[in-house]
Length: 290
Image 1 (cartoon, rainbow, N blue to C red):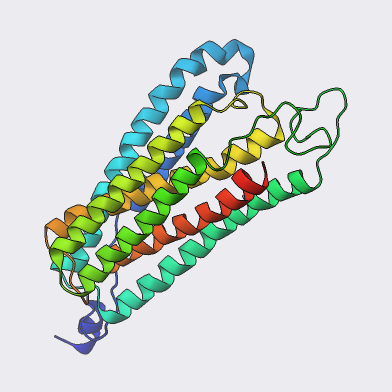
Image 2 (cartoon, one colour; image 1 turned 90 degrees about the horizontal axis):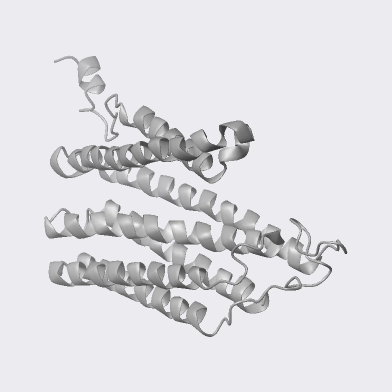
């Protein structure tokens, strides 16, 4: 075989040239269907009141297939990546280094999302705008913060409980990582199981908290900034829990090795990012903002 052919098949360099895949295009389609369907369901009047009854029923017919297609895309795409890493040996040390850089940049991009949400919250709370005839109108706080009529959560009840839950989950995922590096598969599996359980518990507590919010349907700038920041974080907790569940089953199959476990490492990085963001949310929105 010629040198040119060797290079084409990736045998003369440590990099991985991925094969053509349909999953990025399918994921984009699935994301579009999911987003468009949810928007139609939540805002059926976006195309006019005459179409509202039809769009209300059409929304679930679009976002449910979109959601199922997202799940399918996740499954097959992760299956291919796991096969490349564990069975075909494409994830060389150089490739793993590139993956680490990619994950770090991804987390940086996520940080900027939350920077925008915190910016909106602090701009609204430090300089509350006045609108005398309607203090709860969108974008206005009636000159005070929290706006008049808003009953905030006591930060040292459920929010503090959730803070302790997430901090404990950071400890258990670190335990799992340490066990993996030491070749302790049993400790890895137990640490992951505890972290997943704590992540699900956090989500349950936050759902309970949301159900008891007195400002859920009042509108206004407080509710908008509160739900945007905490809800986006909650979505990240669900995504991170999903990552960890995948890692749990991979760990049970023996995929991870002390010197070859980027999939778990990426999930652990993401989970620590979720922990740190929550600390800022707790201090700024639940405690200082109340």
